[in-house]
Image 1 (cartoon, rainbow, N blue to C red):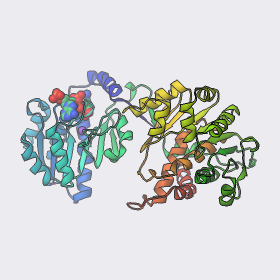
Image 2: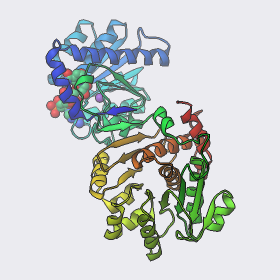
Image 3: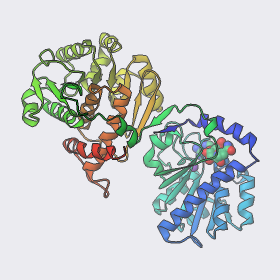
Image 4: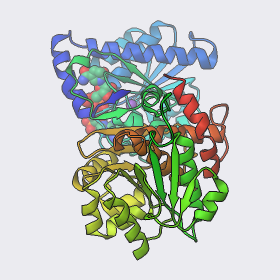
Length: 486
Ligand SMILES: NC(=O)C1=CN([C@@H]2O[C@H](COP(=O)(O)OP(=O)(O)OC[C@H]3O[C@@H](n4cnc5c(N)ncnc54)[C@H](OP(=O)(O)O)[C@@H]3O)[C@@H](O)[C@H]2O)[C@@H](O)CC1
Ligand SMILES: [K+]
């Protein structure tokens, strides 16, 4: 588990550290970290260091200063460094002077920068960091585009420029980094726009003691492994938690089969199904006890409601019945729409632990979604009194008590029909096993994404599309892989 802090919090934590350290020491430490990663990248990509060409795109603020100082460090190791100054009159004076002392080349015209980028082995993006406002300016955008066109790898200094450090929203022309080196603490961009950042290296600049409790948590395999329910020697099918699935319809039996099967694969114990796709569920999963209605289902410890349910009166009645049972509930798909439509269902949902799992479109039916997805999810959870799992390439789970986690997916293969049904089955099974909604959502999101990676073959190579039924099928392998981290 690790924490993520907002740029504002990082800036506040930097102040006392800056005050008690010699001037420029923090930046030097940051720059040495950048140079170290750059050297490793050069070595790995070109088999050498001396004489290799690195271009530093240096902006007007301290991010540019980091880049210039990193250029100085690289020069000392024999790298041919060209700095392109985007605001020549505002370039960091000490960094620029240091690079000059090491005979680094400095250019100011964008066209000269472009031809240097074309011939570079590596580009350092030190255009802008946590002080960014809006998208890239034209000169910076031209240089970022040149690196992309020439397929020169970019190492982002602190954050990929053109991507909002707080929200992860990327302007069209934003930098796509092969790697990112950040300082002091990970920032939201690193988990909300992980594909833009590449692998992130965190350089310690001594902020630790100054940081407040992390506003965002990222779960790792070991955290999930420690909570994944597995049977003990005295468990039977009932003691581990029985999950009921109220999903699917005559028109959409697939949702029922995907959700119920995922629940059966996620935890040991038992799955009950209640709905009009009972025949299809029985045929696909003989171990699932299927009935036609929630009333007939028998005892469960948590309900999954919504996928393929329909939004008519019958759907609303099913949701009301499930909420009134006073058990943990996972509400997905049509259940989210119904919650948006009926105030009295929202009131009932406050009375029992509920995890809702909307995608962006469904989220908009229950709360306002802004560019700041973390803030939107946090507000929705607090206002509605339930736990919100907002799906997306980065999945956000926000509890009404303010806890927020982000799961940055390693791939985008999950963007496929039916994958949400699989997630709801997994998360529902975890609720039935006794995990609180926040943990159930976080653990389910991680294992679900892992199953997609495995199903897509993305751990061995570039991967291929993976339909939801194959994501479901890869759940056991994903759970095993995650549990290895125990
Ligand atoms: N504090 C420390 O000691 C340490 C700080 N550290 C480093 O400092 C960074 C933060 O530095 P910062 O606060 O100076 O802001 P920064 O990100 O360089 O940007 C501000 C400048 O960029 C410009 N600009 C703005 N938007 C832009 C855009 N869209 N496109 C292009 N340009 C844009 C804007 O220029 P202006 O509007 O004035 O022309 C402004 O001057 C942080 O990310 C980390 O790398 C580390 O060294 C550790 C120690
Ligand atoms: K940057």
